[in-house]
Image 1 (cartoon, rainbow, N blue to C red):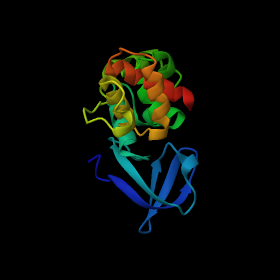
Image 2 (spheres, helix red, strand yellow):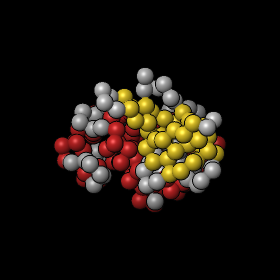
Image 3 (tube, one colour):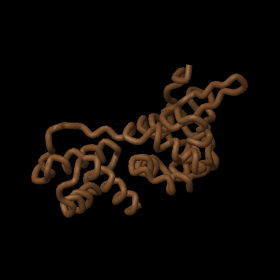
Image 4 (tube, rainbow, N blue to C red):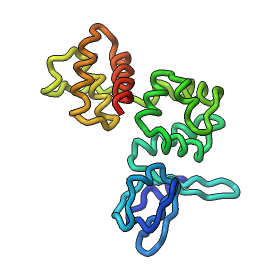
Length: 198
């Protein structure tokens, strides 16, 4: 039932600090949304959604991308972490920062996120570390062919997370200054570097 409404496409009718109403064929869908700063009234939007159903409530949650929705679903699979807390994490810190913190086991950073204590932070890392980033084994791209295979694979992994080629050039140079690491270590290094650039 949670995928009964998989996405909503329409115009922004109204929005607030953590929600948006989308007018879709004269029906207003109100949903929790982590990025109201990107919205404008009457903008045409396409929002991926998750319908959370409990015994006493039905709530709609909206996301900018499939990746963001997938991360949200992973987060709420962690024991004791509800959809409102997961949405608060995305709103405050964003997709990249959360993935980076989990993959690098940064419990301190996770504890700074809204609604996350020491126990929850440790549980998130325990449950999700290594399950969020898949490194493809695709053939090397023309512009990264001179780098070792481990760096190329890590760069492909970052590209799959949504980072642009322009951002990855600086990362590739930084990685090449740290020779002999594994793909996983290059990936963590790259994520930490990119988060610091924000």
